[in-house]
Image (cartoon, rainbow, N blue to C red; front, side, top):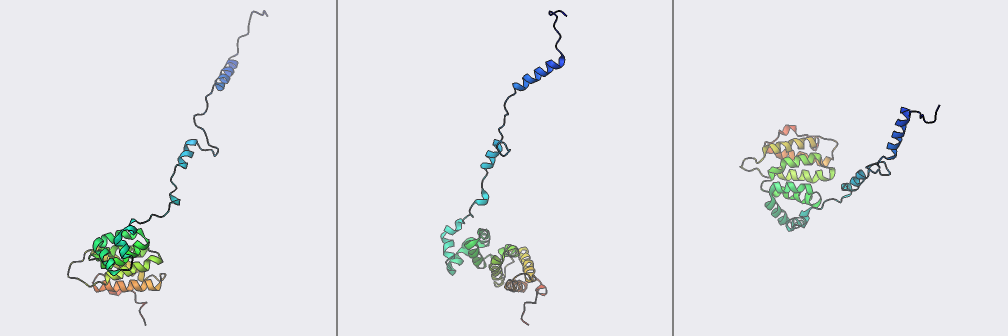
Length: 209
């Protein structure tokens, strides 16, 4: 066969060469992976996340207020002044601060003129409280419930009824400390005297024989 006649290129050869050239011209990846397999963007986002789990407990700003400081000094006049200034609503709001503020607010609540407004919140708190907080909370409920009856209309009859139900639940729970159940019984009887709950529902197993 004459040399001037060249063989036609086979189609599969052309396709292979074109593919090889395209691969050699490929661009670099647009995203750089981290050694752990994630992208650099996700790593930076993780590094910038706030470490809330390691944040220290928030310090109550009320600790720096003179009226709270005076009330925390076991000063009856200071407690009364705090109750007069904040009322039931302000003292209930302060319960969430915990610690010394919680303790002081519970002591001041029975002294507030509108203390009855706190019964519902105190009852709910007593139900959910730890053993450490349940005692002081029940003492506050007893202090409010044991206030002399007045001629005025109840400020929050629904909240008082909720507190009564909470007290009955605590009083009937044998798993709770006996002294806490006794406090609940005393507070429930104080509410029963004001016709807020049925005295027949109050457990009597804690009464002396």
